[in-house]
Image 1 (spheres, helix red, strand yellow):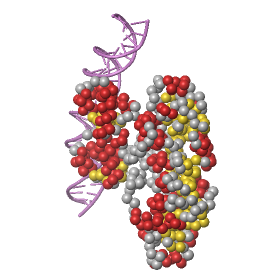
Image 2 (image 1 turned 90 degrees about the horizontal axis):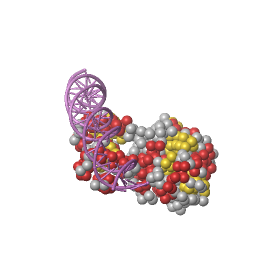
Image 3 (image 1 turned 60 degrees about the horizontal axis):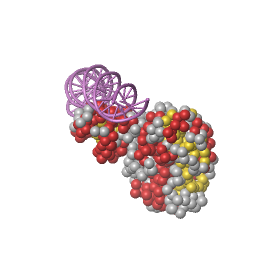
Image 4 (image 1 turned 135 degrees about the vertical axis):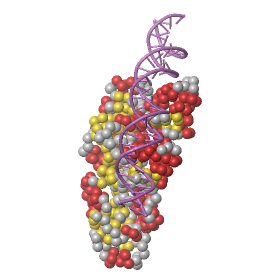
Length: 249
Length: 249
DNA sequence: CATATATTTGCAAAAACCCGCACAAACACG
DNA sequence: CGTGTTTGTGCGGGTTTTTGCAAATATATG
Protein backbone atom coordinates (compact mmCIF):
# COMPACT_ATOMS: atom_id res chain seq x y z
CA UNK A 1 0.00 0.00 0.00
CA UNK A 2 1.61 3.22 -1.16
CA UNK A 3 1.35 6.35 0.87
CA UNK A 4 0.18 8.09 -2.28
CA UNK A 5 -2.76 5.71 -2.62
CA UNK A 6 -3.89 6.44 0.88
CA UNK A 7 -3.63 10.16 0.29
CA UNK A 8 -5.75 9.97 -2.81
CA UNK A 9 -8.31 7.82 -1.09
CA UNK A 10 -8.48 10.20 1.84
CA UNK A 11 -8.98 13.20 -0.42
CA UNK A 12 -11.65 11.38 -2.39
CA UNK A 13 -13.38 10.32 0.80
CA UNK A 14 -13.33 13.89 2.06
CA UNK A 15 -14.78 15.20 -1.18
CA UNK A 16 -17.78 12.93 -0.87
CA UNK A 17 -18.28 12.47 2.86
CA UNK A 18 -16.67 15.64 4.19
CA UNK A 19 -14.98 13.83 7.05
CA UNK A 20 -12.67 10.94 7.83
CA UNK A 21 -11.82 9.25 11.11
CA UNK A 22 -8.30 8.20 12.02
CA UNK A 23 -9.25 4.83 13.45
CA UNK A 24 -11.53 4.03 10.50
CA UNK A 25 -8.81 4.74 8.00
CA UNK A 26 -6.27 2.72 9.93
CA UNK A 27 -8.68 -0.19 9.75
CA UNK A 28 -9.40 0.25 6.03
CA UNK A 29 -5.73 0.36 5.10
CA UNK A 30 -4.60 -2.08 7.76
CA UNK A 31 -1.93 0.28 9.04
CA UNK A 32 -1.40 1.85 12.42
CA UNK A 33 -3.20 4.99 13.45
CA UNK A 34 0.15 6.75 13.65
CA UNK A 35 0.63 6.25 9.96
CA UNK A 36 -2.79 7.70 9.24
CA UNK A 37 -2.03 10.62 11.48
CA UNK A 38 1.15 11.26 9.55
CA UNK A 39 -0.85 11.11 6.33
CA UNK A 40 -3.36 13.58 7.63
CA UNK A 41 -0.65 15.85 8.94
CA UNK A 42 1.04 15.87 5.58
CA UNK A 43 -2.15 16.69 3.72
CA UNK A 44 -3.02 19.35 6.25
CA UNK A 45 0.40 20.96 5.89
CA UNK A 46 -0.26 21.18 2.17
CA UNK A 47 -3.52 22.90 2.94
CA UNK A 48 -5.57 20.17 1.33
CA UNK A 49 -7.55 19.13 4.37
CA UNK A 50 -8.24 20.32 7.85
CA UNK A 51 -6.95 18.06 10.55
CA UNK A 52 -8.99 17.83 13.73
CA UNK A 53 -8.95 15.71 16.83
CA UNK A 54 -10.09 12.25 15.72
CA UNK A 55 -9.62 12.66 12.01
CA UNK A 56 -9.99 15.38 9.40
CA UNK A 57 -12.65 17.41 7.63
CA UNK A 58 -12.72 19.05 4.23
CA UNK A 59 -12.42 22.77 3.93
CA UNK A 60 -15.70 23.02 2.06
CA UNK A 61 -17.45 21.89 5.21
CA UNK A 62 -16.27 25.15 6.61
CA UNK A 63 -19.31 27.40 6.99
CA UNK A 64 -17.40 30.33 5.54
CA UNK A 65 -17.65 29.31 1.90
CA UNK A 66 -21.14 28.99 0.58
CA UNK A 67 -20.81 29.71 -3.10
CA UNK A 68 -17.66 28.35 -4.62
CA UNK A 69 -17.60 30.09 -7.91
CA UNK A 70 -15.69 28.71 -10.82
CA UNK A 71 -12.33 30.31 -10.23
CA UNK A 72 -9.31 29.69 -12.35
CA UNK A 73 -6.84 27.38 -10.57
CA UNK A 74 -9.19 27.33 -7.62
CA UNK A 75 -7.58 24.41 -5.83
CA UNK A 76 -4.15 25.92 -5.94
CA UNK A 77 -5.40 29.23 -4.71
CA UNK A 78 -7.00 27.52 -1.75
CA UNK A 79 -3.77 25.78 -0.90
CA UNK A 80 -1.86 29.03 -1.10
CA UNK A 81 -4.43 30.81 1.03
CA UNK A 82 -4.25 28.07 3.64
CA UNK A 83 -0.52 28.50 3.90
CA UNK A 84 -0.62 32.27 3.91
CA UNK A 85 -3.21 32.67 6.61
CA UNK A 86 -0.68 31.98 9.33
CA UNK A 87 1.54 34.82 8.20
CA UNK A 88 -0.72 37.46 9.69
CA UNK A 89 -0.23 38.01 13.40
CA UNK A 90 -2.34 39.68 16.01
CA UNK A 91 -2.26 43.48 16.10
CA UNK A 92 -0.68 43.77 12.67
CA UNK A 93 -1.87 46.24 10.08
CA UNK A 94 -2.18 44.56 6.73
CA UNK A 95 -2.79 45.77 3.17
CA UNK A 96 -4.71 43.39 0.95
CA UNK A 97 -5.37 44.13 -2.68
CA UNK A 98 -7.94 42.43 -4.88
CA UNK A 99 -7.89 39.14 -6.69
CA UNK A 100 -9.36 35.73 -6.10
CA UNK A 101 -6.37 34.35 -4.21
CA UNK A 102 -6.60 37.14 -1.67
CA UNK A 103 -10.33 36.56 -1.47
CA UNK A 104 -9.72 32.95 -0.53
CA UNK A 105 -7.22 34.09 2.06
CA UNK A 106 -9.76 36.50 3.53
CA UNK A 107 -12.29 33.71 3.69
CA UNK A 108 -9.87 31.57 5.67
CA UNK A 109 -8.50 34.01 8.20
CA UNK A 110 -8.68 32.36 11.64
CA UNK A 111 -11.69 33.59 13.61
CA UNK A 112 -9.52 34.56 16.55
CA UNK A 113 -7.19 36.74 14.49
CA UNK A 114 -7.11 40.29 15.82
CA UNK A 115 -5.60 42.34 13.04
CA UNK A 116 -6.43 45.41 10.99
CA UNK A 117 -7.04 44.70 7.32
CA UNK A 118 -6.92 47.61 4.91
CA UNK A 119 -8.25 46.81 1.47
CA UNK A 120 -9.45 48.38 -1.74
CA UNK A 121 -11.33 45.25 -2.75
CA UNK A 122 -15.09 45.30 -2.32
CA UNK A 123 -15.58 41.52 -2.22
CA UNK A 124 -12.91 41.18 0.45
CA UNK A 125 -14.48 43.97 2.45
CA UNK A 126 -17.90 42.34 2.16
CA UNK A 127 -16.51 39.01 3.29
CA UNK A 128 -14.59 40.39 6.23
CA UNK A 129 -17.61 42.13 7.68
CA UNK A 130 -18.52 38.64 8.79
CA UNK A 131 -15.26 38.14 10.64
CA UNK A 132 -15.69 38.53 14.39
CA UNK A 133 -12.38 40.17 15.27
CA UNK A 134 -10.83 41.84 12.25
CA UNK A 135 -10.72 45.62 12.23
CA UNK A 136 -11.62 46.52 8.68
CA UNK A 137 -10.73 49.64 6.73
CA UNK A 138 -11.88 50.22 3.17
CA UNK A 139 -9.94 52.50 0.89
CA UNK A 140 -12.33 54.67 -1.06
CA UNK A 141 -12.08 55.88 -4.59
CA UNK A 142 -13.43 55.36 -8.05
CA UNK A 143 -14.40 51.75 -8.73
CA UNK A 144 -12.69 49.70 -11.37
CA UNK A 145 -15.73 47.56 -11.94
CA UNK A 146 -14.01 44.73 -13.78
CA UNK A 147 -11.74 44.03 -10.83
CA UNK A 148 -14.05 45.23 -8.06
CA UNK A 149 -11.34 47.35 -6.52
CA UNK A 150 -11.09 51.07 -5.97
CA UNK A 151 -8.44 52.99 -7.86
CA UNK A 152 -7.33 56.54 -8.56
CA UNK A 153 -5.53 59.38 -6.81
CA UNK A 154 -7.69 59.25 -3.67
CA UNK A 155 -6.61 55.66 -3.11
CA UNK A 156 -2.95 56.57 -3.55
CA UNK A 157 -3.42 59.55 -1.26
CA UNK A 158 -5.00 57.46 1.44
CA UNK A 159 -2.32 54.82 1.18
CA UNK A 160 0.45 57.39 1.46
CA UNK A 161 -0.83 58.26 4.91
CA UNK A 162 -0.55 54.72 6.20
CA UNK A 163 2.37 52.53 7.18
CA UNK A 164 1.42 48.88 7.24
CA UNK A 165 3.25 45.87 8.64
CA UNK A 166 2.35 43.56 5.79
CA UNK A 167 1.24 43.89 2.23
CA UNK A 168 -0.35 40.81 0.71
CA UNK A 169 -0.32 40.95 -3.06
CA UNK A 170 -2.30 38.67 -5.29
CA UNK A 171 0.34 38.51 -7.94
CA UNK A 172 -0.49 38.38 -11.63
CA UNK A 173 3.04 38.15 -12.93
CA UNK A 174 6.41 37.71 -11.37
CA UNK A 175 9.85 37.44 -12.93
CA UNK A 176 13.00 37.25 -10.89
CA UNK A 177 14.81 39.90 -12.92
CA UNK A 178 11.94 42.15 -13.99
CA UNK A 179 9.91 41.93 -10.78
CA UNK A 180 6.16 42.01 -10.21
CA UNK A 181 4.08 43.39 -13.05
CA UNK A 182 0.45 44.21 -13.82
CA UNK A 183 -1.73 44.68 -16.86
CA UNK A 184 -3.82 47.65 -15.71
CA UNK A 185 -2.15 51.00 -15.24
CA UNK A 186 -4.43 52.27 -12.49
CA UNK A 187 -4.17 49.08 -10.50
CA UNK A 188 -0.42 49.21 -10.93
CA UNK A 189 -0.24 52.60 -9.28
CA UNK A 190 -2.33 51.40 -6.36
CA UNK A 191 -0.26 48.27 -5.85
CA UNK A 192 2.93 50.30 -6.01
CA UNK A 193 1.63 52.55 -3.29
CA UNK A 194 0.69 49.60 -1.12
CA UNK A 195 4.08 48.08 -1.62
CA UNK A 196 5.93 51.26 -0.78
CA UNK A 197 4.04 51.85 2.44
CA UNK A 198 4.51 48.45 3.92
CA UNK A 199 7.35 46.85 5.86
CA UNK A 200 6.98 43.35 4.48
CA UNK A 201 5.73 42.21 1.11
CA UNK A 202 4.07 38.83 0.73
CA UNK A 203 3.27 37.59 -2.77
CA UNK A 204 0.71 34.86 -3.34
CA UNK A 205 1.61 33.24 -6.64
CA UNK A 206 0.14 30.27 -8.47
CA UNK A 207 2.84 28.33 -10.32
CA UNK A 208 2.00 29.40 -13.87
CA UNK A 209 2.59 33.05 -13.00
CA UNK A 210 6.32 32.55 -12.48
CA UNK A 211 8.44 33.93 -15.26
CA UNK A 212 5.59 35.87 -16.87
CA UNK A 213 5.68 39.62 -17.46
CA UNK A 214 3.01 42.29 -17.93
CA UNK A 215 3.44 45.82 -19.31
CA UNK A 216 3.55 47.75 -16.03
CA UNK A 217 6.08 47.13 -13.29
CA UNK A 218 4.87 47.25 -9.69
CA UNK A 219 8.12 46.55 -7.90
CA UNK A 220 11.41 44.75 -7.89
CA UNK A 221 12.03 41.23 -6.74
CA UNK A 222 14.28 42.28 -3.89
CA UNK A 223 11.43 44.17 -2.22
CA UNK A 224 9.60 40.91 -1.63
CA UNK A 225 9.90 39.26 1.78
CA UNK A 226 7.92 36.09 1.23
CA UNK A 227 6.45 34.18 -1.68
CA UNK A 228 3.66 31.72 -1.02
CA UNK A 229 3.08 29.18 -3.75
CA UNK A 230 2.30 25.52 -4.28
CA UNK A 231 5.65 24.66 -5.82
CA UNK A 232 8.19 22.68 -3.90
CA UNK A 233 10.87 24.81 -2.31
CA UNK A 234 13.46 22.90 -4.28
CA UNK A 235 11.86 23.65 -7.63
CA UNK A 236 14.43 25.28 -9.85
CA UNK A 237 12.04 28.08 -10.79
CA UNK A 238 12.28 29.26 -7.22
CA UNK A 239 16.07 29.19 -6.87
CA UNK A 240 16.70 32.77 -8.09
CA UNK A 241 14.20 34.02 -5.52
CA UNK A 242 15.76 32.00 -2.72
CA UNK A 243 19.15 33.40 -3.65
CA UNK A 244 17.77 36.92 -3.34
CA UNK A 245 16.93 36.03 0.25
CA UNK A 246 13.19 35.66 -0.21
CA UNK A 247 11.42 33.19 1.99
CA UNK A 248 9.42 30.59 0.12
CA UNK A 249 6.41 28.95 1.68
CA UNK B 1 -18.62 12.11 15.97
CA UNK B 2 -16.02 14.81 15.59
CA UNK B 3 -16.22 17.99 17.59
CA UNK B 4 -15.74 19.81 14.33
CA UNK B 5 -18.91 18.34 12.91
CA UNK B 6 -20.94 19.52 15.83
CA UNK B 7 -19.49 22.99 15.54
CA UNK B 8 -20.31 23.23 11.88
CA UNK B 9 -23.79 21.91 12.42
CA UNK B 10 -24.39 24.40 15.19
CA UNK B 11 -23.20 27.30 13.07
CA UNK B 12 -25.32 26.16 10.16
CA UNK B 13 -28.33 25.78 12.42
CA UNK B 14 -27.79 29.26 13.79
CA UNK B 15 -27.52 30.76 10.33
CA UNK B 16 -30.91 29.44 9.36
CA UNK B 17 -32.90 29.24 12.58
CA UNK B 18 -31.11 31.90 14.61
CA UNK B 19 -31.17 29.81 17.78
CA UNK B 20 -30.16 26.45 19.19
CA UNK B 21 -31.03 24.72 22.44
CA UNK B 22 -28.48 22.89 24.56
CA UNK B 23 -30.90 20.11 25.36
CA UNK B 24 -31.91 19.63 21.73
CA UNK B 25 -28.34 19.49 20.49
CA UNK B 26 -27.30 17.00 23.13
CA UNK B 27 -30.13 14.80 21.94
CA UNK B 28 -29.29 15.21 18.24
CA UNK B 29 -25.63 14.33 18.71
CA UNK B 30 -26.20 11.80 21.51
CA UNK B 31 -23.70 13.44 23.81
CA UNK B 32 -24.11 15.00 27.21
CA UNK B 33 -25.30 18.54 27.63
CA UNK B 34 -21.94 19.35 29.16
CA UNK B 35 -20.28 18.59 25.89
CA UNK B 36 -22.67 20.82 24.02
CA UNK B 37 -22.07 23.58 26.53
CA UNK B 38 -18.35 23.28 25.96
CA UNK B 39 -18.95 23.46 22.22
CA UNK B 40 -21.05 26.56 22.60
CA UNK B 41 -18.50 28.10 24.91
CA UNK B 42 -15.74 27.48 22.41
CA UNK B 43 -17.69 29.01 19.55
CA UNK B 44 -18.70 31.90 21.75
CA UNK B 45 -15.07 32.52 22.73
CA UNK B 46 -14.25 32.77 19.05
CA UNK B 47 -17.01 35.33 18.72
CA UNK B 48 -18.95 33.19 16.29
CA UNK B 49 -22.10 32.85 18.34
CA UNK B 50 -23.73 34.36 21.36
CA UNK B 51 -24.16 31.96 24.22
CA UNK B 52 -27.26 32.41 26.33
CA UNK B 53 -28.96 30.53 29.09
CA UNK B 54 -30.39 27.37 27.54
CA UNK B 55 -28.49 27.46 24.28
CA UNK B 56 -27.15 30.08 21.87
CA UNK B 57 -28.36 32.63 19.36
CA UNK B 58 -26.72 34.11 16.30
CA UNK B 59 -24.71 37.15 17.13
CA UNK B 60 -26.82 40.14 16.17
CA UNK B 61 -23.82 42.47 16.34
CA UNK B 62 -21.93 40.29 13.93
CA UNK B 63 -24.62 39.25 11.47
CA UNK B 64 -23.41 36.17 9.69
CA UNK B 65 -26.75 36.21 8.00
CA UNK B 66 -26.99 39.79 6.79
CA UNK B 67 -27.25 38.62 3.20
CA UNK B 68 -29.75 35.87 3.51
CA UNK B 69 -31.57 37.31 6.46
CA UNK B 70 -35.24 37.77 5.75
CA UNK B 71 -35.41 41.51 5.27
CA UNK B 72 -37.87 43.29 7.47
CA UNK B 73 -40.83 44.72 5.51
CA UNK B 74 -39.27 43.44 2.31
CA UNK B 75 -42.29 43.93 0.06
CA UNK B 76 -42.74 47.53 1.05
CA UNK B 77 -39.09 48.26 0.50
CA UNK B 78 -39.32 46.86 -3.00
CA UNK B 79 -42.33 49.05 -3.77
CA UNK B 80 -40.49 52.10 -2.52
CA UNK B 81 -37.39 51.24 -4.50
CA UNK B 82 -39.48 50.80 -7.65
CA UNK B 83 -40.91 54.28 -7.24
CA UNK B 84 -37.61 55.89 -6.34
CA UNK B 85 -35.59 54.56 -9.22
CA UNK B 86 -37.05 57.10 -11.62
CA UNK B 87 -35.87 60.01 -9.50
CA UNK B 88 -32.28 59.64 -10.62
CA UNK B 89 -31.53 61.29 -13.97
CA UNK B 90 -28.66 60.91 -16.37
CA UNK B 91 -25.43 62.70 -15.48
CA UNK B 92 -26.48 63.27 -11.91
CA UNK B 93 -24.14 62.71 -8.98
CA UNK B 94 -25.91 60.81 -6.25
CA UNK B 95 -25.10 59.95 -2.63
CA UNK B 96 -26.51 56.68 -1.38
CA UNK B 97 -26.06 55.51 2.18
CA UNK B 98 -26.57 51.97 3.48
CA UNK B 99 -29.66 50.06 4.43
CA UNK B 100 -31.78 47.43 2.81
CA UNK B 101 -34.16 49.85 1.09
CA UNK B 102 -31.29 51.54 -0.69
CA UNK B 103 -29.90 48.14 -1.60
CA UNK B 104 -33.16 47.27 -3.29
CA UNK B 105 -33.05 50.58 -5.12
CA UNK B 106 -29.52 49.90 -6.32
CA UNK B 107 -30.62 46.50 -7.59
CA UNK B 108 -33.38 48.14 -9.63
CA UNK B 109 -31.59 51.05 -11.24
CA UNK B 110 -32.42 51.07 -14.98
CA UNK B 111 -29.58 49.60 -17.04
CA UNK B 112 -29.42 52.66 -19.27
CA UNK B 113 -29.01 55.07 -16.38
CA UNK B 114 -25.82 57.08 -16.76
CA UNK B 115 -25.19 58.54 -13.35
CA UNK B 116 -22.46 58.66 -10.73
CA UNK B 117 -23.31 56.88 -7.51
CA UNK B 118 -21.24 57.67 -4.46
CA UNK B 119 -21.77 55.32 -1.57
CA UNK B 120 -20.30 54.17 1.72
CA UNK B 121 -22.21 50.88 1.62
CA UNK B 122 -20.23 47.80 0.67
CA UNK B 123 -23.23 45.70 -0.45
CA UNK B 124 -24.43 48.52 -2.69
CA UNK B 125 -20.96 48.94 -4.15
CA UNK B 126 -20.71 45.20 -4.78
CA UNK B 127 -24.08 45.20 -6.49
CA UNK B 128 -23.41 48.20 -8.70
CA UNK B 129 -20.21 46.75 -10.12
CA UNK B 130 -22.61 44.72 -12.25
CA UNK B 131 -24.31 47.80 -13.62
CA UNK B 132 -23.19 48.61 -17.17
CA UNK B 133 -23.33 52.40 -17.08
CA UNK B 134 -23.13 53.65 -13.53
CA UNK B 135 -19.96 55.39 -12.52
CA UNK B 136 -19.26 54.14 -9.05
CA UNK B 137 -17.33 55.78 -6.25
CA UNK B 138 -16.79 54.15 -2.88
CA UNK B 139 -16.12 56.26 0.16
CA UNK B 140 -13.38 54.71 2.22
CA UNK B 141 -12.97 54.57 5.95
CA UNK B 142 -13.28 52.30 8.91
CA UNK B 143 -15.99 49.68 8.50
CA UNK B 144 -18.99 49.54 10.76
CA UNK B 145 -19.41 45.82 10.30
CA UNK B 146 -22.95 45.52 11.61
CA UNK B 147 -24.26 47.92 8.96
CA UNK B 148 -21.63 47.18 6.28
CA UNK B 149 -20.95 50.87 5.75
CA UNK B 150 -17.80 52.90 6.21
CA UNK B 151 -17.74 55.56 8.90
CA UNK B 152 -15.34 57.93 10.57
CA UNK B 153 -13.57 61.20 9.87
CA UNK B 154 -12.16 60.09 6.50
CA UNK B 155 -15.67 59.54 5.24
CA UNK B 156 -16.78 62.98 6.43
CA UNK B 157 -13.66 64.51 4.90
CA UNK B 158 -14.25 62.89 1.56
CA UNK B 159 -17.88 63.92 1.52
CA UNK B 160 -17.03 67.51 2.33
CA UNK B 161 -15.11 67.69 -0.93
CA UNK B 162 -18.10 66.67 -3.03
CA UNK B 163 -21.27 68.44 -4.05
CA UNK B 164 -23.93 65.98 -5.15
CA UNK B 165 -27.20 66.55 -6.92
CA UNK B 166 -29.13 64.01 -4.91
CA UNK B 167 -28.83 62.29 -1.60
CA UNK B 168 -30.90 59.17 -1.13
CA UNK B 169 -31.32 58.28 2.50
CA UNK B 170 -32.61 54.99 3.79
CA UNK B 171 -34.46 56.53 6.70
CA UNK B 172 -34.71 54.82 10.06
CA UNK B 173 -36.83 57.43 11.81
CA UNK B 174 -38.63 60.54 10.71
CA UNK B 175 -40.73 63.00 12.69
CA UNK B 176 -42.17 66.13 11.16
CA UNK B 177 -41.06 68.37 14.02
CA UNK B 178 -37.87 66.65 15.15
CA UNK B 179 -36.62 65.63 11.71
CA UNK B 180 -34.65 62.59 10.60
CA UNK B 181 -32.86 60.68 13.34
CA UNK B 182 -30.50 57.75 13.71
CA UNK B 183 -29.50 55.31 16.39
CA UNK B 184 -25.77 55.13 15.70
CA UNK B 185 -23.65 58.19 16.33
CA UNK B 186 -21.04 57.48 13.68
CA UNK B 187 -23.61 56.79 11.03
CA UNK B 188 -25.38 59.97 12.03
CA UNK B 189 -22.34 62.07 11.32
CA UNK B 190 -21.90 60.47 7.92
CA UNK B 191 -25.52 60.97 6.95
CA UNK B 192 -25.38 64.58 8.08
CA UNK B 193 -22.41 65.18 5.87
CA UNK B 194 -24.16 63.59 2.90
CA UNK B 195 -27.21 65.67 3.52
CA UNK B 196 -25.27 68.91 3.80
CA UNK B 197 -23.36 68.37 0.58
CA UNK B 198 -26.29 67.62 -1.59
CA UNK B 199 -28.80 69.80 -3.41
CA UNK B 200 -31.81 67.55 -3.02
CA UNK B 201 -32.65 65.11 -0.28
CA UNK B 202 -34.78 62.06 -0.98
CA UNK B 203 -35.95 59.94 1.95
CA UNK B 204 -37.08 56.35 1.45
CA UNK B 205 -39.42 55.59 4.35
CA UNK B 206 -41.49 52.53 5.18
CA UNK B 207 -44.75 53.52 6.90
CA UNK B 208 -43.93 52.42 10.43
CA UNK B 209 -40.97 54.78 10.57
CA UNK B 210 -43.15 57.88 10.52
CA UNK B 211 -43.42 59.62 13.86
CA UNK B 212 -40.56 57.64 15.40
CA UNK B 213 -37.48 59.25 16.88
CA UNK B 214 -33.95 58.03 17.57
CA UNK B 215 -31.33 59.63 19.81
CA UNK B 216 -29.29 61.43 17.16
CA UNK B 217 -30.68 64.04 14.77
CA UNK B 218 -29.45 63.95 11.19
CA UNK B 219 -31.36 66.87 9.78
CA UNK B 220 -34.53 68.93 9.83
CA UNK B 221 -37.68 68.13 7.98
CA UNK B 222 -37.53 71.25 5.83
CA UNK B 223 -34.25 70.08 4.27
CA UNK B 224 -36.05 67.16 2.65
CA UNK B 225 -37.11 67.52 -0.98
CA UNK B 226 -38.95 64.27 -1.52
CA UNK B 227 -40.29 61.42 0.58
CA UNK B 228 -40.91 58.06 -1.08
CA UNK B 229 -43.19 55.74 0.83
CA UNK B 230 -46.04 53.29 0.34
CA UNK B 231 -48.65 55.38 2.14
CA UNK B 232 -51.36 57.16 0.23
CA UNK B 233 -50.63 60.82 -0.36
CA UNK B 234 -53.82 61.72 1.50
CA UNK B 235 -52.86 59.82 4.64
CA UNK B 236 -53.01 62.19 7.54
CA UNK B 237 -49.55 61.19 8.76
CA UNK B 238 -48.17 62.82 5.64
CA UNK B 239 -50.04 66.12 5.87
CA UNK B 240 -47.47 67.98 7.98
CA UNK B 241 -44.79 67.05 5.46
CA UNK B 242 -46.91 68.18 2.50
CA UNK B 243 -47.50 71.49 4.24
CA UNK B 244 -43.75 71.98 4.59
CA UNK B 245 -43.59 71.75 0.81
CA UNK B 246 -42.13 68.25 0.58
CA UNK B 247 -43.06 66.17 -2.41
CA UNK B 248 -44.57 62.80 -1.56
CA UNK B 249 -44.26 59.86 -3.92
C1' DC C 1 -39.01 33.82 46.89
C1' DA C 2 -39.33 29.05 45.84
C1' DT C 3 -38.58 25.65 42.62
C1' DA C 4 -37.21 23.62 38.45
C1' DT C 5 -33.81 24.08 35.11
C1' DA C 6 -29.13 25.48 33.53
C1' DT C 7 -24.53 26.23 34.36
C1' DT C 8 -19.93 26.00 36.33
C1' DT C 9 -16.24 23.45 38.43
C1' DG C 10 -13.30 19.78 39.60
C1' DC C 11 -12.22 15.19 38.66
C1' DA C 12 -11.20 10.84 36.45
C1' DA C 13 -11.06 7.72 32.62
C1' DA C 14 -10.75 6.84 27.88
C1' DA C 15 -9.33 8.16 23.57
C1' DA C 16 -6.34 10.47 20.65
C1' DC C 17 -2.05 12.51 20.03
C1' DC C 18 3.05 13.50 19.81
C1' DC C 19 7.89 12.22 20.16
C1' DG C 20 11.74 9.52 19.75
C1' DC C 21 13.44 5.26 18.38
C1' DA C 22 14.14 1.06 15.75
C1' DC C 23 13.83 -1.44 11.74
C1' DA C 24 13.08 -2.68 7.08
C1' DA C 25 12.47 -1.62 2.38
C1' DA C 26 13.72 1.33 -1.32
C1' DC C 27 17.09 4.09 -3.24
C1' DA C 28 21.66 6.34 -4.65
C1' DC C 29 26.10 5.81 -5.95
C1' DG C 30 30.87 4.50 -6.25
C1' DC D 1 27.57 -5.58 -5.56
C1' DG D 2 28.22 -3.25 -1.10
C1' DT D 3 27.33 0.47 1.65
C1' DG D 4 25.42 4.59 3.24
C1' DT D 5 21.12 7.34 2.99
C1' DT D 6 16.38 8.22 2.66
C1' DT D 7 11.66 6.98 3.42
C1' DG D 8 7.82 4.68 5.45
C1' DT D 9 6.15 2.26 9.24
C1' DG D 10 5.12 0.47 13.95
C1' DC D 11 5.80 0.63 18.90
C1' DG D 12 6.35 2.32 23.73
C1' DG D 13 5.53 5.78 26.83
C1' DG D 14 4.38 10.33 28.23
C1' DT D 15 1.10 14.21 27.15
C1' DT D 16 -3.07 16.42 25.71
C1' DT D 17 -7.87 16.44 24.49
C1' DT D 18 -12.34 15.05 25.03
C1' DT D 19 -16.03 13.56 27.56
C1' DG D 20 -19.33 12.30 31.30
C1' DC D 21 -20.39 12.53 36.13
C1' DA D 22 -21.50 14.69 40.48
C1' DA D 23 -21.69 18.43 43.55
C1' DA D 24 -22.11 23.27 44.08
C1' DT D 25 -23.77 27.41 42.10
C1' DA D 26 -26.47 30.41 39.13
C1' DT D 27 -30.60 31.73 36.47
C1' DA D 28 -35.31 31.97 35.00
C1' DT D 29 -40.08 32.21 35.96
C1' DG D 30 -44.52 31.87 38.05
